[in-house]
Length: 193
Ligand SMILES: C[S@@+](CC[C@H](N)C(=O)[O-])C[C@H]1O[C@@H](n2cnc3c(N)ncnc32)[C@H](O)[C@@H]1O
Image (cartoon, rainbow, N blue to C red; front, side, top):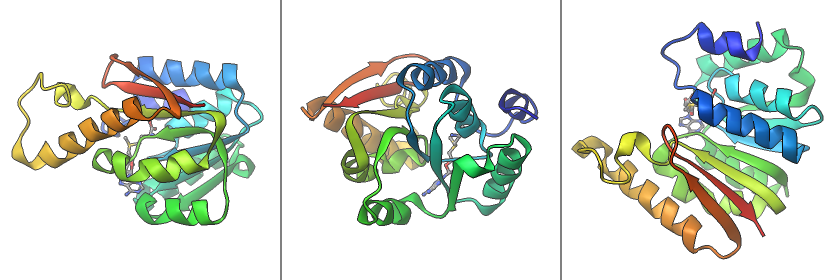
């Protein structure tokens, strides 16, 4: 089963949407990253897509949910890319400082984990991103909530506030050259200068 079939067989998994996926794929083809970090593996769709786009890449990908991680590993095996993947099962909030302590560096980071934590993860990601590398963050507009276009239920408010702070932090950080793509659920692409 290739990565496109994985998506077509599962209606409920929160995969990266099609237009955003195409942009991520094109980035991989153009930038040819060698070391990718992904936060939020789910069942491996976006990781497989990136490995298809960047043929020489190795990916470190973090997933908290054990069952999803097992499915992802099966999908990596079926696609013959097991040797190109380090799948870490754990909470990114704990794993990211460990990777940083190990001195890990990445030339592409795809941030697609818990939306309320993007701001907290940012300093670690910035540190581990190579000069000239790209940080791509998905769902930054979260159903129009972040721009204030839709009513936000109380239970989602802190997540929305944190995403607004994340966008502001990126915009104001002169070490990054960032752009916000207002497509689908919103995506930022930030190059570290
Ligand atoms: C939007 S989905 C990822 C979709 C995937 N990138 C794709 O497009 O195929 C987000 C994933 O992040 C995982 N997640 C949530 N909180 C996490 C955490 N604290 N650490 C690591 N993974 C987490 C969820 O279990 C979920 O599978």
